[in-house]
Amino acid sequence: MASYRLLFVLFVMICSVTAIGQPRALVFQSDFGLKDGAVSEMRGVAFSVSPELRMFDITHEIPAYNIWEGAYRLYQAAPYWPAGTVFVSIIDPGVGSERKSVVLKTKTGHYIVTPDNGTLTLVAEHLGIEEVREIDEAKNRLRNSGKSYTFHGRDVYAYTGARLASGAISFQEVGSKLNPQVVRIDYQKPVVENGVVKGNIPVLDIQYGNVWTNIDQSLLDKLGIKIKDKIHVTIYHEGKSVFEKDIPYVNTFADVAIGENMSYMNSLLQFSLGINQGSFSEKYKVYSGAAWSIAVAKAK
Image 1 (cartoon, helix red, strand yellow):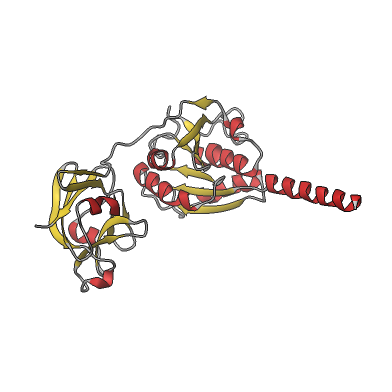
Image 2: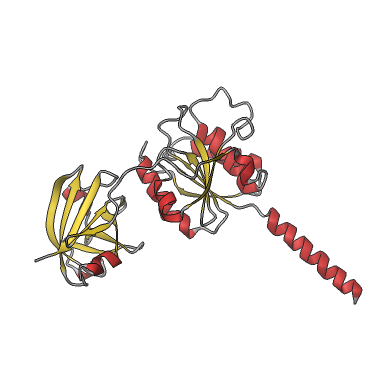
């Protein structure tokens, strides 16, 4: 009996060591595109740190220099990954400048390796900040890359992210602890004011040209808006009205005729605008970003 107990204890210990040593997922995002070798170089650096790493992508098609869209795609994807996942997000028009290189740990247990240039705006707001550390490049930078000033995505972020995800370093070994705050991009947060819901157009459903907002169902409920109601929609760019119409509120695209305008809740359960088998964005020249806002009210 004693021998069986000893075997059981050894089995538990082996399983525990395996679980602790299990590499976390490493997930990349950038505005690099896939036309050249930049993404491959980052993956190569990560693979050199640990061939056992499991590597994935959010996207590498963020529009060039568009920090806001990077912030949104990161916030969109991160909650669907398990705690412990390490994200490397590089939209870095200020590469080589004085902006900080950081790793943020969210209250949900996710790690974001990125320049602190606004990319963390929505993750910080929705997932919360547990801790922020500045990357110590004396310890966490690809060897012999010190004279490279324009590819920190490879030399600093991919390398640090891979070391963290593989367990080569702990979060504490990333670098010095910073105040729990990050650079944030200003935008219209969803609010109800005088019978109108105001919000932002953070991103487009790019493939189809649908317009997504940050307004959820609970805010429409406050106005008594229900399916099949007409909604008065006004869209602003930098405070100037660029679109104003009454639009039906429906469950899905097939609820209106082909070519007709519609509003609906998207897959993230946020208020959106579209055209059945058409592009709302293209037809009305409505786009997305921190400068785009929307006002929604029940049509009279």
